[in-house]
Length: 113
Length: 119
Image (cartoon, rainbow over all chains, first blue to last red):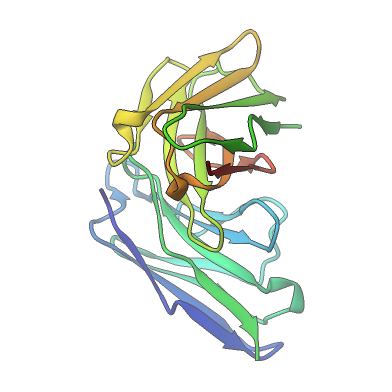
């Protein structure tokens, strides 16, 4: 199995400030023939199912605010929230779909400082 | 509009078999590239992928749970069924089904169904 390790486990950021969450994969998620990284980011608020934010490492899902961005390639990826809003309080998960044996990171809890 | 909804028992006893049904609308499981997956989440813990079934009948399972899981699809009824044998209290959690394509993984989720394993 591909192991995804997120850092930090929890994060407190002031409103309007930048939040950065990292995800490191135990093997490359770059499908070289397609030049795509098969890495997605999800947001999960309490009592709700996860919501897809980013796929292919950096493509924003339709309707997702542009303050959310994804970057990285190969084994190292980052989710950035450029200006934290109150409604962004949630747990964020990275997820690989490079292999048909899918895996998720352990999650990062984002709170307001 | 794609929607999915999970259904099944809320309480099962240890050693019993769990059967969950995902009923979906807004897409066809006979369309190339489309799949439905199951993911679970113990209370307060992380997401864990369980199984996937695709339009071409291909089935994929979590290696750690493969011996206990079976996923099947009924394209005409628009249902995907997951069975998990030999349930244990550690299997307690919310079980989700989700629409999948090979491009955008798990882009639409059901609301989830809570399953408690207790005698």
